[in-house]
Length: 286
Ligand SMILES: Nc1ncnc2c1ncn2[C@@H]1O[C@H](COP(=O)(O)OP(=O)(O)OP(=O)(O)O)[C@@H](O)[C@H]1O
Ligand SMILES: [Mg+2]
Image 1 (tube, protein in one colour):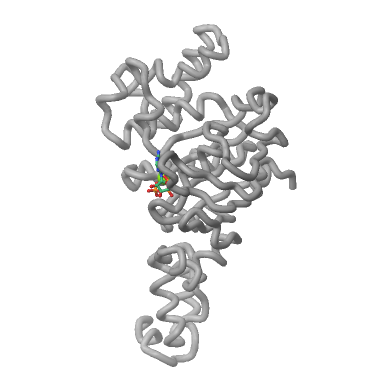
Image 2 (cartoon, protein in one colour):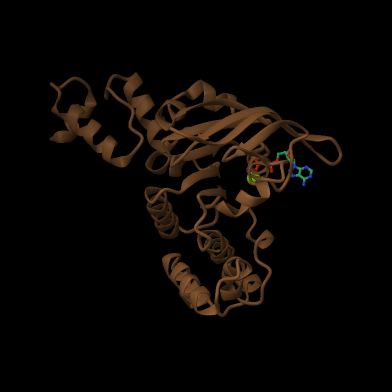
């Protein structure tokens, strides 16, 4: 599989000497959905800004499609990278939602009919076509977040970087968004997403990295990382509720495996109920 983002030994300090990243190395493969999990202040947003080329590392380097973000050639591939900032107010600055989403396509010189078509299509996909004529700064936070995502989607980027895309979305909007992103990914877009919401990872992310204090503590399959109690603790993160519950049940011998999804949990409980009566779980089937 081709590597589309390659970062080596990234160091980054903000003004005032605050060290945000210390020696971060990372490969992202074409077509994958990579999750970056970590607590507040871990350096997730800083890493996203570095990948997008908006800030440059103090040390180390980062290449996207083989072009170092410091190089001139990087400017040519910049439009193939979509970024959704953590704070939608950093992304919305036009008078209407329509104009904010139209900004990118217009700046590419697209004719107005084509702009209308593609913007309306994107607003519809995001379920926000009713907001088209509203001023973005007067929207609810979740609505703004959806508009910010639309401004990135409309450009059909090859790589989409999403900084906490599900923060502040209601449960249905969260599921809808993950569905939209999965669809996009199926059609070839590489996704890199940060979050501290462990619950969105199992259904959506196959591979993830765990960050804390400006470092990557580990990377691997979502299952490996989310079931690694020690590593999560080291990162000041909690496992998903299902993992927590079933780890306890497993330690009591009531179940044999720890699930990541509700479907898996159902199967594991079914199996446990079919086993010869051995603990209280067997009583549940009566
Ligand atoms: N503009 C800034 N100026 C100075 N320090 C900053 C700035 N932005 C972030 N930092 C610091 O850099 C470190 C990493 O911040 P970053 O925003 O990358 O973390 P994060 O993992 O995205 O956190 P969160 O989950 O809260 O979004 C933190 O210690 C933070 O205080
Ligand atoms: Mg952040």
